Image (tube, rainbow, N blue to C red; front, side):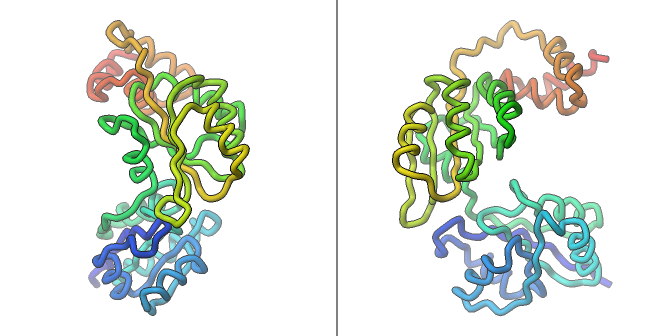
Length: 274
């Protein structure tokens, strides 16, 4: 029996018109649509008069539903994976299903489309030459401060996500750690009340304290222009991360990002580290 195909279908991050013709055709043709929140996705499907079976696939049923969906794919069913908004697999449970499908030798077809991170980056006014997508920072202040201290050293632009109820806490920590570093804060992207604020963390904190908070947020952080990297002891930097419990692979990634060094060079240095 021929296996089915898993289609990764990006959906609008706000404006329902931001969907490709190809994505609409795939949604019309698949046997099943796996959605993070079926109540959210049904609005999109109704808007385009798409009548296909829906099933919920989210962080609370990721294990059992993942097995069920792989089973259906193995039986020859074609499935479209969608998230609530944007590209599935980025900061959502879709990542796990994609991995499982690849392990099961099931064809995975990614469709291009909207994603909040890149949309916010290009409107930030900050460098797009090199950038890191960091995703959501830790919810606990102590851990979040540690992550911001790490981001502070990055020479490239960094993109982070944040939920509305934690935005002010994050900005307060950014004031403490990043000081006068430039940031941009985007919300309600592609929607009627879309807004991007550009300034320092302190200015952003004052602005959102007074104007109120609504919508999901993408914060883009300017890279550290004052980092000096010519005399970096890469092996020493690797050992520091290894002593903190990181695997060698993780340590290579951390050092590469922190000091803006080519990953293959850091990897070569790691071969000399026990």
